[in-house]
Image 1 (cartoon, rainbow, N blue to C red):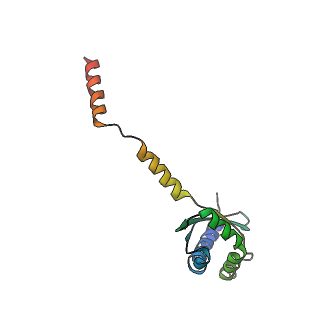
Image 2: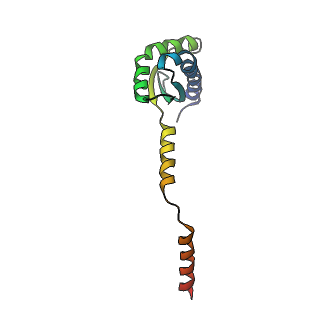
Image 3: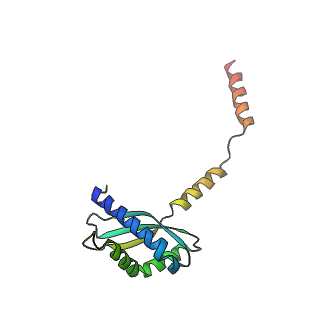
Length: 133
């Protein structure tokens, strides 16, 4: 369970990283729309786990690798934004947030499951009436 301090720090970082990805870094990643969906912070506030969602990206894993290559630049930009609020700029670790894709996959699977037809339910009721007599 995260402390209030971790949660407050995570919100700060999510807001600032979101701005970095949407404004400053948009042209660096082939026009992909990158959203920071979740930020988790280690108890000592030294490591930040950043979950990203990609729109208009053909290969999210390739884009994630590119972001990891530019980790130092992103961290420097973050440092400019939060330098007056923190003592140490945390290490950034990026991950693909595939929650939306997973939800869509599950929804598609649920749609594939056949719903019982009305005829089948009528038969069951008629069979029950016959057994009661």
